[in-house]
Length: 199
Image (tube, rainbow, N blue to C red; front, side):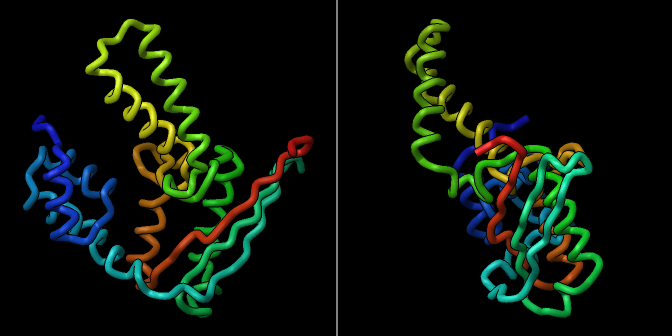
């Protein structure tokens, strides 16, 4: 497989307006072929979804989920453009699936950008110290640390998490599908997870 470079990701992003992670994934799927990656994104409706991302989301709902054992609960604010879409069964099902994801995985934030920088700094320090203790060569340590941070964000940022219900698909993929089918911008505004006995 061809190495996916930052320049390739930037070119695809500039040409499509799609997010960096989606661009990197598309390039991986198409062995680094930018034109094929554009086709790949278009076939999945991702470029259309991205173009809607700047539209205002002033409607939506607050969805609640309580686990069957009554020991875990989630409150989610998910927004869309119109009250019409917010009232649909599809939108409510989307909110329910995202709540189940939050209950199961306990993410730190909606997106990687929203994770507390102090937490990321601590993770960087841990990864750096581990690499040194493992005897890794100094020139490789920075890449090892950044790889650890990418993995940490993928596991702890809600949008980047792999769905508990579907392998190799993320929460962002789920939302992208909903954007494509509803024709509206959809955004997760915030969430809160409660577990009995936790502060």
